[in-house]
Image (cartoon, rainbow, N blue to C red):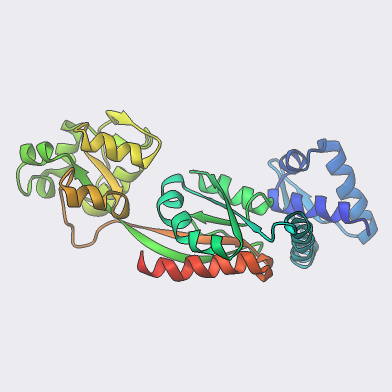
Length: 298
């Protein structure tokens, strides 16, 4: 059987679409369609069900993917070993949210550099895009805030992050002690908010958990990087909700203050994702194990 057909098949299976697979393979969509039809004729059974938006694998398609994908990944790894033989360095491609990857994951992996591991990172804020890129083979490991479904990706829990409602000290002084606990939703409508997106994802989650309500205010400042949100909040732009690991130093220095200490703070879970079968590759397995073990202290 032609390995190119299997490679196209696995890419379609992971991408969930002939169009996306064609882009990933640098082929035309008719070429991808033709290769899948050829493989289906050779096997004597359909591998995908065509839908209005993308394709869904048949039972035979799922079975073939689970059997073939790990071996195709191993062949790719053999090629990469050949490319890296002279230097003796293996490369790990890691994807994840920019802030968490920069401040947690990459520093945690740096001890492995002296053991012959090279690191390449891709910052992707959107979980769906991250998982799609991992499934398509663009990354070796990915960090997300959602656990993937299906059998082509495998996940491990890394850690939970606590979210903290913060502001510059002058805002805290203006609000007065206990004001937000009793009048949080009302005050949110009156005070400026710093967020990563117009939909107020962090503030909304916090308000739903702590106040059992939805925020009604619009953001005064939108900064698509949490580090930018922290800097703006510290400069007095308004309230913000941030993971504790990100603002811990600013809290200790008094640059910002926590406005509330709820008995059950909002939490968000991070997962470490790999393609099924690739943890048999030593450099990926080592990095995966190292991250999971290190995350116990996060």
